[in-house]
Image (cartoon, rainbow, N blue to C red; front, side, top):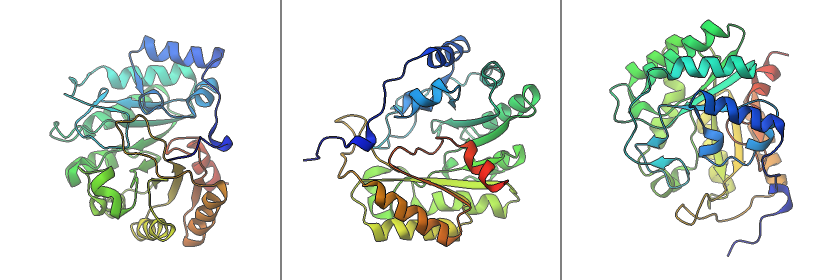
Length: 286
């Protein structure tokens, strides 16, 4: 049985005027955030500081990953007005850095890649100074879909590896470890010149050596930025937590990753793939 949540994972309940302002703008434009859908432990801090990670293409995912709180159900009709609404929300929030992610839409011919590109186009039309990071699904390995993402040229292109290969069948049964790695390397090989990024959760029963092996694989596939965070079970219906990883172990992973050549590493219990995402570019541009 897992012990009670340690002190380093305790966060304040979302509140305050900043939180309410962000919530109001999201409601005004009928937008979803991964912050809410994935029950991110940092959403109070991010909303309070006026930041959010937008989740496009609806709230329902065509896959049923056992770690994720996003709903796996019949996908919604794609909202053609969503790219503009995201751009207007970015303007109203005064964001200088924005992260766009999505549910997985295996039902769409291009997996939603064109919708991502349209969203980037609208953001840059209305907010030309804003940096854009995309956190994309695997598009089932479709290179044409990936090219649509490359052509819109996000400042950072992310795709999360999520866990170690031995746990894929339990954690990501509809995904493929090698295919996820190839999203990152294919992007560079197909002409993407920005920074690539990936993230892994720990606490699912993986070993230290398995995590290190994943980091090596990511570097071999030209991944530039890395996030490592603690897995937290969204509900009793999801894959159970095996252990809370001590902050000292996160530092060990961080140091190891830097020694491998990652340009930026965020590794601590509360880190999520989009948390304080702007820091990576700032770090590499100084």
